[in-house]
Length: 305
Image 1 (cartoon, rainbow, N blue to C red):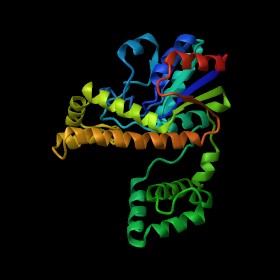
Image 2: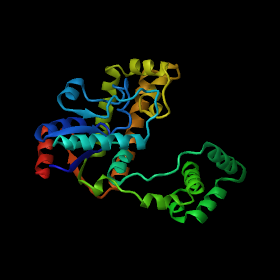
Image 3: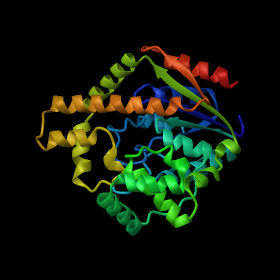
Image 4: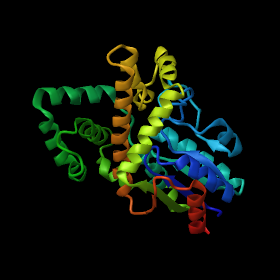
């Protein structure tokens, strides 16, 4: 399987980790995490990292690589993942990329465009203009300078409107044009993407079970320890911790914290599926609620043979 990249994607709690380990037993591979939160040290229970025995049995990459106080960008992920892929292939093994962060998967396969760095002064000026003249004024400017981007951005999405205008002013080229001048690993390697899915109610039950397990395994204590330190903006977005913070602050009880984590995780899973369904390259595998992990891994292996 030289020069082949295998991706295993899907919503949270569906069973990607277990299936990836069984698949790894069948092929000579190393696993690269495509999870935006598993990069953080100390965020173990809340991000459902693989158990230590599994991490020790199969080489893993991009897990536990930075402190929760550090920011971590898509560009950083891509650079580290590309380096890991090249090293794995040099060892004559196959990279198996596993996770539910759709943007991470996309920038690897399709590339990431080189855009100007954030200009805080320019961004503040645009925000002030939006406050003084309304979002509509900025959106009309975007329509004039980059109609293609304007057609894809909602008229009330101030953050993306400002970013598009910021890029145009800094680069003097529309952001839509910059996006076209990209190349990804899909241009160099054979890419195979498998997506896991199951009936919605079954997936929701799995999410509820996982959340209960997370609390039983010490999510509250882990959140307490993390929240005593400084969390980066990126790390603070992790599901579970902010809901537990409300409980620790006395805003509501433990059962309400669990309910909120379950609800928000279900919403997150729905967004993940919406993202992945747009990618027609994905070959979907429908799972029964009580699927056999080894059986699914063998099914994937046969598709790769």
